[in-house]
Length: 81
Ligand SMILES: [Zn+2]
Image (cartoon, rainbow, N blue to C red):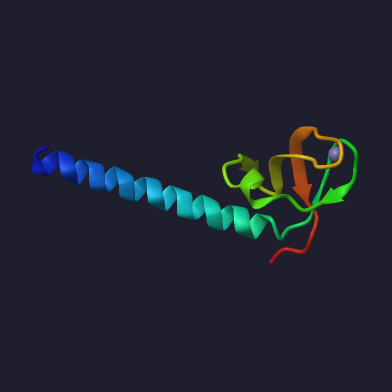
């Protein structure tokens, strides 16, 4: 392996680690937030691993409800931090 290849590999590994750390922090913070299910109307706290890679739009996150098992855009209902 040439020096350039090692550098490219190091940069992509660094980027991957960075993405994982950001996702872990996001998951950890979101697991403390209260959500309301748009399908059954029950409140729940998501697991950190459920939210870390999920897409979201403002206060809406695509997560699976632990009560009815539907994966939909669920809204955060607690106070903003
Ligand atoms: Zn539900």
